[in-house]
Length: 477
Image (cartoon, rainbow, N blue to C red; front, side, top):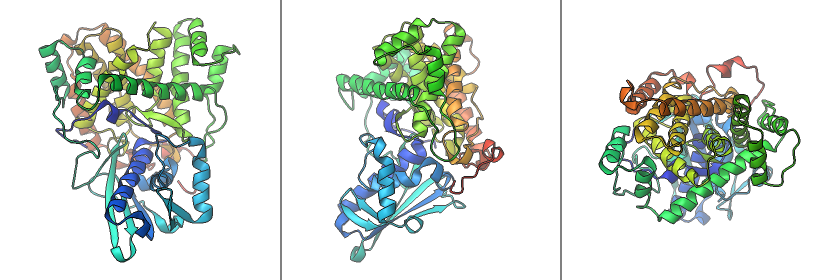
């Protein structure tokens, strides 16, 4: 979904939310919150008699596996993905079902019958985007309020008649950027690094101290998803019976050595050495851990999506554990990575329903490659080259989630994206970008063209690829 002249904050690219999907869980959740506020402003929630939700296209086809139905109910119920106690999500869902009642904004009771009030239009897709959700509020004598929203990837929500991102007022940035060429030109004029340019743009929205503290808060959530995933065993929810692997790999690598907290844990990881096999095992473990948490409706950071949430944390953790990195560099990493994600969003898409998995794992790998190159001391041109290399080798990747769940092949793909990011960074750091034949803008355009030409079955519908090859018995997916 190409939207020009869009000014995107780092905190639009990196959002704290709940898994398993940014476009199918977080986006619809946010859309429900937007609709709830609109209805309250127009007629007051006390006047609402019932609310019906209709899901279209990819949201309908994989909505059960992605928890889209649950997400919209949580949003309408007044819960926020940043603050909700994720351990309570199942009990909230069970209470709504058992009482056949939904409390709008946590207060105003309306009847809720699952088959009557959440409709899945699996054979109907709205023209603007495959991820469409319609909300209909019966307001009694005040009539109906009907609004349609589109979850266009990475938790971004828009309306067809208004392509502006909600809650993102038009601003004038000191360094407006719509392409990699723009970014490179600003560097040539100012001699600033990517992260410095992006930081100055962020100051339009908030203070530097708030930007830095906000990004470190996001890193804390990333760390928690790594650490939590490394310590959690069992089977992932959803019916595929996928066994968690991060914890067993983690325990094998640490060989039973005790630790009290993250700092002690990180020191143990470092002490194990830096052989290629050992390092590779840990990068895989970091990425698996995050996305196993994501698949379990835990809190993660979209980077730039939930399905690809493990790539950037795994690469940052690799840098800190094996490259003598310091946490202060995380801010530089995330600022750099966010601008790459923004360029892909403007020139192509972050939505797997629109562009396949190249829009998720591919973009996250490109973001991570640029961020890693930045903290390794690479030039701006090398950062852009690293991003290009990473995406070039994800072009055409399909999205074919088995059973509509963000598990197979999604979780393993995060390990692949992380390793490709590290490789791309190393290649760029050992290369002269002046000799590169492919630019980042070339690969962004190619990705978008590939997305437009990709068969719809391979765009998060669970109607192609592995989704058809793996035997399942998920009656609701």
